[in-house]
Image (cartoon, rainbow, N blue to C red; front, side, top):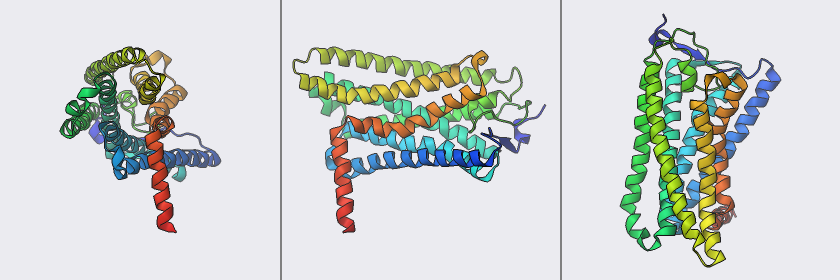
Length: 311
């Protein structure tokens, strides 16, 4: 039996053996990565520089953009480097770091999305109490709790997974170190401890999901009582982007970690991993900016200011 401590490196999934296709993968991932950094970076800069966006909603959006940048930076740079240099290797500690930071960012992101649903619930259903319930201190505490929950969850999963004995080789069937793929390398009955941790996390995730659903049931009930179409438009412009992001993130992540082994395949695992670890970070800025006039105005003003500085 090979203990995990004796494994010096892992071999990640090779996209193809053809050099031209490897470079194509590198170019595609590079384009997605730069688009995600640009979109989320614009949101960060716009929110930080425009005093009109110094509100709880945009504070949480700023945290979401930070988490998106961290999440996509955990997986794509190593995948791009492997495609560019025609290698599959990642060190043991590099694999541990990937698994840790991916769980850290994804758990914290879902916590922030849950808090954002609460923000929208207060803004629409209890607008007179918005300032008292979501003051500066309360927002900072909730954001700290979200980041802290991500750290705690990541520590539990990483410590549990990489303390297991690995007796099925060191080839990971994914383009990054994904915990379900690492568990496939463990001995037949040794992975049950990590399965228990996964079930605990799943229960917490389900609790957050129930809270989000409850919040939106109350929001839609309040919206339907609004007499003016303008009020409907404002409410839906606040809520629809958040609902789209939550649905995309949650459905793909749950499918990736809880799908039955009988329907697992290399191509399906790859597509699902891209959907929950890459796509949300890339499209979140687009989703939030499409229906948000204040954010679009702030970005437009930022570009105008930069143009004036260069003239």
